[in-house]
Structure formats: structure tokens, C-alpha cells
Image: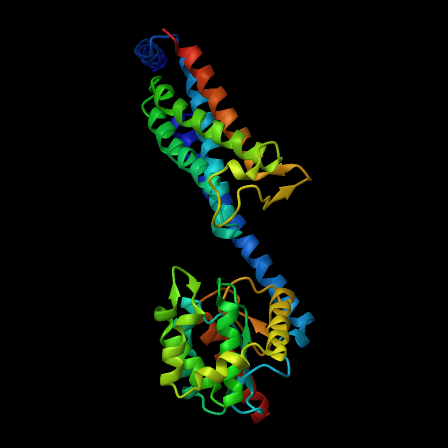
Length: 221
Length: 160
């Protein structure tokens, strides 16, 4: 055999091996994630989890969220748009996966805002002002106050409420559930208990539309 | 056709300063080294891009020596150039030393405090372990060893 034929065959074989291996591995991971989500349904939502939308909405999105995660902040307006496009049909539940350094304290602040009845205002303020308080992938809780004050929150009250044991317990539960469901990156979405087959906004939209269609069919039938 | 092929092979052999048979053996050795370098590079990419294992600092230094070998060795195969060993061997030796250092680190022979890895993924953490002893630094050391040996042999074969 000619030398360049040997070389080209070896190159093609290695490339094919890589691509096939990647396909196989990703498929296996997606199947495992789906199986873990199906097996651990009770880990998906807890009573304490903040939720937006009607309780009887046919499509339920659970988002594992890190306030310091840039991609989470980029996804939020898109998720909101999708919810606005299908009013009353989509419900959103937020779970925490504070993977960034310092994120845990910001989650405590966010949870404390619920005692003032301004959770979603605080949520949107934090997401919108993220570049001001996340520096070099580190969350700086001491820099979140101005944007929260502008959103109408009593920051002194937040500072004392965020230390509550209830909040610490709720966050610990979320982190434990994230581990159970094999959530390693944020944002991670589950739509009616189904994880995204691969990461991306289109994949999320597809999954939501599938579930909306299934709900529409069930209603008609 | 046959005599002409033979004379072409002879001329190729003369250009390399050796007999055609040893030139072929040297080509196969460099090709083998390229095969190991390419498989190792793809393996490293599989670990980081598909399995999403974050490479530590020492892994990155080893990659910095393994990735260029794929291209340097391929360039030495077409047309066959015995001097490719001169350019590729220093990369293989540097990568080999780093891999050895990394392996000793994960085995606890060298304490972590002596390493430059203070942030991100600590180099002493074992991320992947197959059959209880095959770790990434071990695979890296084996690859650099195989490449180094193949290149050294190719050099001996083609020495004028």
C-alpha cells in the first residue's frame, strides 16, 4: 500500500472513532440524565421552591439556576419571552445550583427578598445588574445592594434576613437535589421532568413545544 | 514498470542517505509516532470536550507539547525527512518530563506544595482511573515514551 494511502486511512479511522465515541458517550449521558430525572421526581421540586405562573399550567419548567452564571442571565429574557408567548400554559420553578464562588451568599439575599414579597423584582434586578457584582467569575455579595435598593427592597432587612436557618436549609436541599439529578452546569432545565437532550435554547424551546402540543392533544382528547 | 519503481525507491533511499529498506522502516517508525501523538491528542480532546473533564495546569503544558507533534511529524512523513527527529524529539522529551512529574505528583511522591497549581483544578486530583491504576498522567507518560523511543529508533536507522 502506498504511504499516503496508509496515512489517510489512519487519519480517517481516528476521526471516525472520535466522532462515533462522542456520539455514543453523549447519547449515553442523555439517557442516564433522563433516567435519573424519572427516578428522582421528588427531587425536582420542593415545597419551598419559588415558582412563577399558574399552578395548573400544563408545562412546568424547572430551572437549576446560579445568579452569578452569565448563561443563566442570558437565558432569563428568552425564558420570559417564551412564557409571555404562552400565557397561563407555562410555569417556572427556580432551584439553586450556586456553583460560582460567593454565589451562595447572593442566593441567601435572593431568598431573603421573599420575606418582603419582592422575589421576582430582586431576581430580575440581580440578573440585570450581574456584570456589576460578578467579577472574574466571583460573586461579590457586598456589591449587590445598590441594584436591589433601586428595585425597591429594604437592604438592611435583607442583610439580617439572609442569615436565617430556613434559608440555609432550603439552599442545602437544592444543592443536594442538584447532585441527585446530576446537575453539574447551569442553567439546567427540566420540562415536565424531562432534561434537555443537549444544551441550548433551541433544545429548550423544542422540548417546551413538544409538551405544549402533548397537553393540547390531551385537552382535545 | 518494475525496474522504474525500484530505481525510484533507490533514489529515495539515497536521498535519505540509507538503503530503501531502512528508509521504509524509519518511515514506519515516524508514522507510528504520529499515530500515537494523534490518538493521544484526540483522546485528550475527548476527555475535555466530550467528557468535560477540566484539564489542570500540568495537563495543559503536556498538551502544549503533544498537539504540535501531530503536525510536525506529519510534515516529516510527506516527503520523508529524516531530520524530523531533530525537531520532534525535543517536544517529546519535554512532554515526557512533564508527564513524569505529573505522575509522581498524583502518586504522592512529590508534594503538591511544590507545584504551580494553586487555582482551578489541582493537578494532584485523579479525575479518571481505569482498572484501578490507569490515570491520565500515566497514559500521557506512556504516549511520550512511545513517541520518544520510535523517534530515537528512526534516527538510528537513518543515521548516515
